[in-house]
Length: 94
Image 1 (tube, helix red, strand yellow):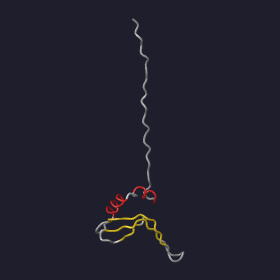
Image 2: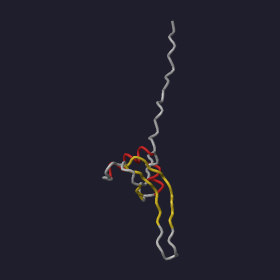
Image 3: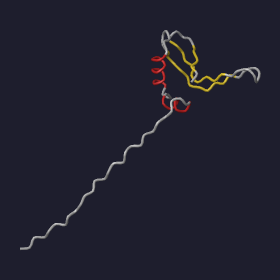
Image 4: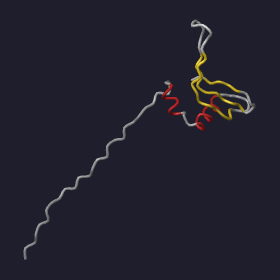
């Protein structure tokens, strides 16, 4: 009785490719808004960093630009308008 030899099969395990890392620069306007663009995350961050009586209860994202009266006057760019627990409005420039 002849026994057939099984053909040697090699099974290759597929290697997983390493995950690509993505870094966002938080010092840029895009990077900061990308990471902190979620309102709850930004509120927690600001309340942790800033010591404001009553804390910040609400905020609005915006790019409000206030120009000076002449071309030599300074202009201001505001990114966040925050409302504190005391009802005060503060502006946070990023």
